[in-house]
Image (tube, rainbow over all chains, first blue to last red; front, side, top):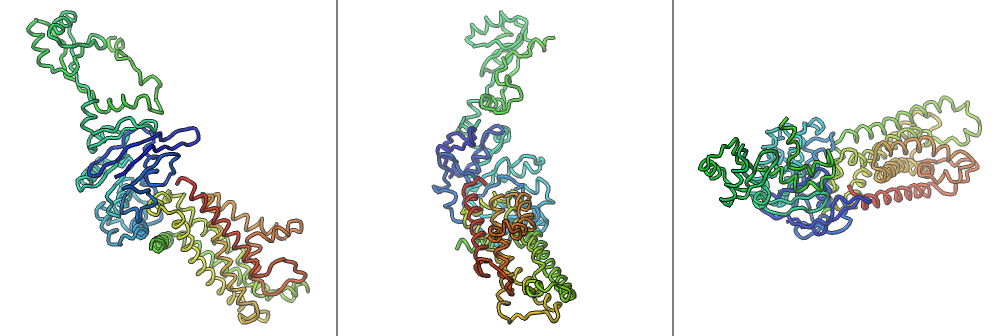
Length: 317
Length: 256
């Protein structure tokens, strides 16, 4: 269990992490989501005692990181796969970490085997590809057979095979009852792996919820309708007690409704429909809506407040 | 015992990178070879030396002539042992494994210093015996008064210069910056400050000027140095303590 309490990190005037309070619970994958620059890595570095918090506190199983005896046996982390001396072999890299935490050499061979690096164990790390480097970093995290695992953007830059391998690994680690805390800036990635979700933006907590609740609350489903007999359809739907919103252009939208009853209703009244389509707003959109105000580096400062009919006249032209 | 684990870990680290081998080999080869060369030259030139120089002739110091250059390799060794952690990013992995920063830093320095001591002693004895063998009739013996002290002192001097470099590198973190300051300082600036009359009084308290006093056996004519051989080494030791303390305080305070 990782517990953060009012965790804050300031760099001069800039607040990187702002009063974060949440817990990472065992037995599930907790996704740590936020746009780039939201403070995810800074938070993770504070959990490991690498960066000192300006205020607040973070504890692992009730203790500060530097109070843990042989910390790699409590929590294994992959923050930056490049945090390796390139001139050292994979085996020696893991061996020095193992020795510092009283972990037997046999375990080094085990984790090398788990991540599939046995064949290149004696090769220098600087010759490793991005994927191999990531595997070496994960081997280091698994070394102490810890109850808690923490990964910072583990799939970044990996090929599909590597991404699949990491997803499967994280799920199996959680299935073994371990605490898995993994960061990403991609909602789609989290939706595939995480059961619980912590969302931050500009260092502030935006959501701390289960994935199922997040999906329920944030994925908007609606039916999109286009018709040349707009006024008539509006009347008919109104009489049937169905709430309609006028979307951009000639389209109408029915929130949360099903397409079938609307189609049948239109047919009964002889109304011509040009479009009747069920729509689902993606989780990615929900995440972007949630973090829109807190995104630090906007491509365009107005993208967060685009009106719904934006581009309508362009489409018609 | 946690410190023992960390010392084992640091030993694995130091023996598994190439820079350890090449810096230390360079220190041995340069110190011994240059010492032999200067010894051989001194023997052939002795009769042509001015009387004052002949009076000051210290065969032990002559065989250690290579140390001026050899110490630079020791400096590179000391700097790289510490700054490698920073330049590669390994420091974050290391501190996640050993979050007690004092244990981490001082285990690293203990291991590197022990290795530097072993290599430094071997270098010092090799430079002495090989140098003396080339000095012919001008040679001195290990059993002569003060000679054994000077030879052991030579090994200690090399160890302390490496440790001082480790302290400086802990403070500065960047290998380029550390070497860019230490190399010209010990190769040029310190020598100038220690030999120019205007700055001599202060210059001889610099780490290398004070520390190298231990390698002198024959007292200089009109020598007014305010410390003896061990006193000089003690001054150098204080510099090392100061550099390491500074390195530790910064490591403790800084974000990794």
